[in-house]
Image 1 (cartoon, rainbow, N blue to C red):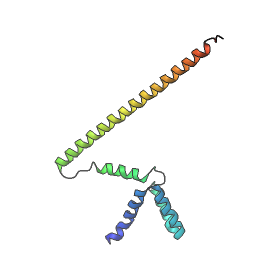
Image 2 (tube, helix red, strand yellow):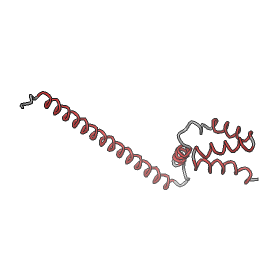
Image 3 (spheres, rainbow, N blue to C red):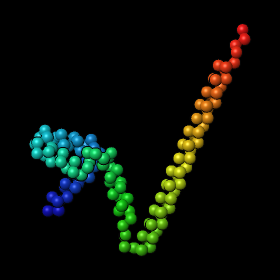
Image 4 (cartoon, helix red, strand yellow):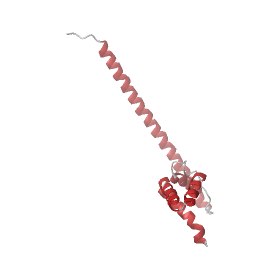
Length: 131
């Protein structure tokens, strides 16, 4: 009985690993072979919001991240895990801040180059041509 109960979740996991196109193909095949199956898949995709999310994998990653904060029952391991996750999140924040500063510096450099080029062209246009 446990195999019968788990095959839908196994099929869902298998389709999630392959992304939204796999869900759409399964739905179309369901309509082709037996229309109620296709209709059921369509309703399930809408109900679970799989049709409107960027990716099924994204929601799975978010769910895995949520499970990362659950207690294992071992307080020493939980403390280590919490410290490691806190440190990794801090490093990620620092890296994202670095990337933002890098983008701003690049944008400023490009803008300065544009303004210098514009000033140079304006100066050349104002100079009288001696011939």
